[in-house]
Length: 528
Image (cartoon, rainbow, N blue to C red):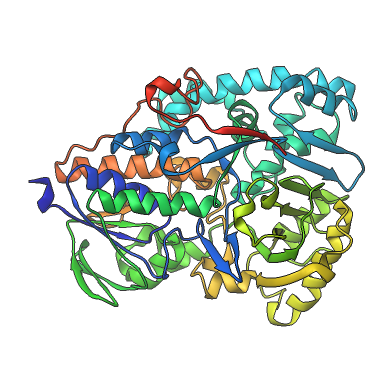
């Protein structure tokens, strides 16, 4: 019987929770072990002094993948958590001069672009049309597990090469449409969702900005952490057992087969083990080096990892009603800033940054009369060039000073709560290898078959889910990894796993939100 099939999930991040939902609904006995005292991993929220902050992701994109997972277990995502579609999606401020209030309304967006570059305004619809085709063609690739080398040699993938243009960087791809470097930045900064530079990121990822304009940018009420909490509730309703504050200390093997894990709460036998923890950290701490020749400590040390982030979570007296929900400042010398992060591994003098002013959309995140500011600066991952114990006070002052470049002159005097997280904290407190918050970099040499596989190739009965495996980072893609992994676990255990809609990650032929009579709530839209 399926109920006799025991699945242990290490980590209650979004990928682990999604896999638990699907496998529990299929009848498996699922136990999730989470090191922290709350669910969500990096996609969690924390509360202090009446303020609520998302720890990591604040952009929620393309809910359709998660909608299909909820539907597969008989639930409705939009009844479990309320989402608001933002318009403008975000406000871009260029250090080189100019600004764009990005909107999914294409006529307005063409006017926004036209103020900086009339030629580029005429190219917007061509860019979106081409990427609509790219997404539709590449859909099957991102939904497939890539377990064998010959999967890379498929004729279908070969036929896509002229469309994908892997010889171009993301910026190189955008040069085919836009002349103004500021407009190219507006359509490529999304590579930071992967922790990469648009000058190094593969051209495939032009689909990221397409996703935003085609399907919208959303704010879940209560923050993205509220989505993780909803997933945990549904998983438990399906029969999943979630054990918090229960760090996994050891994986027990019989030969190369994982048969149990030992955590703070005891030994938990399993027929399948799903690892949702940070890939490099989990491998080097939980799996003996000799058991993973393809991903040995030596080989992991040679891999490319994403950038990290410096964070300030600020509780503010009053509100900034003139500040957009999302604001992004792109440094005057953006290429120099990226080189500081990815090549020189030093701290920039004029760093780019992102600010979320969520309370203009969601006042529930702060006490009455107050608001939150979430400030993120992309920085190098842990490196000998930066000692955060000595650098963090100076960099904090720089971060506050940078906020003046988007019109926030008085932040320091209005702070009533403050929390700082550096790459050292991501590394030491959150168990993220090198503090690389976006995991392994998404270079061509670390994608598809060349990325850690959903059915981990060096071991038996071990599976991976999350940003460290195929297809990669970003919430929609992590949810897709959960669908791939759950299906593989089900196949290997002889348990049919329903994945809900067959539309998958990148279907562009289906409306994002079915009509109300289909039983799926339609998110609100707001003008912020």
